[in-house]
Length: 312
Ligand SMILES: Nc1ncnc2c1ncn2[C@@H]1O[C@H](COP(=O)(O)OP(=O)(O)O)[C@@H](O)[C@H]1O
Ligand SMILES: [Mg+2]
Image (cartoon, rainbow, N blue to C red):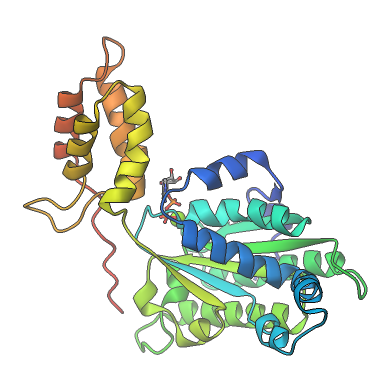
């Protein structure tokens, strides 16, 4: 085994909130109001339980027993669902909403497992353990003695499909199982230490979540492809600014949904990262974006295939 990776090796970019760029990105996410609000509240209470006591004092002149049930939740939230549906974007920006709501500073430690830990045997397990060590160390420093904590840490384990794989499947690679175990141990350490820290795990594999991970999740939030209404919300403003009429926009909203030959529509990221740039590049530098041409491009683009959430 090599030496424990340093903080900088582990997390490419630590983010601190409040941060106005994060707020802008958070506000731009369409159709996730329910997830945004739930996630902000859950994380807020996990990292700053005093918020709930203040609420109880204000509205009930005391601390009802029900608070214990709310506060005893495990320090994990799972964001699961289709690719390009805003899981990473939400996880990377919700810290700002938490910081503003609770009036504290929040730091995000982002670790993506897709690009990391696929090398040597034991590497993923070591990465996960080290990530939890760093998080716990930092959160321990922030935990005020008795009073309210001076700040909070969110650990983001992104692209965690390997960890979402159920330990129940015998064919699961030994290394993956060790990773799941390290993850579960880390969650328990944060919970037992009552630290101002919480973990967000993002995965495409809702169906294969390990029962032990499931049990430790305060909430599991599902993410889906945009509905017609949500596609409209994403496309309306940018296309209007290009001079498209309401009818032009409706035609494109329809073309990016289910079609005759296809049972699924575009993902959010298909719309923002593929379709919109394509129509601009197509017109650039000679002329304007023509609505008929944009519709053709929408019809020709093949949306990202849905993630096949088979259990193996
Ligand atoms: N709900 C949404 N509203 C607006 N844009 C979105 C939404 N979801 C995703 N996008 C766009 O797609 C990009 C990729 O999304 P991402 O969060 O990485 O997806 P995931 O992690 O679920 O695969 C985002 O940066 C954003 O530009
Ligand atoms: Mg992602």
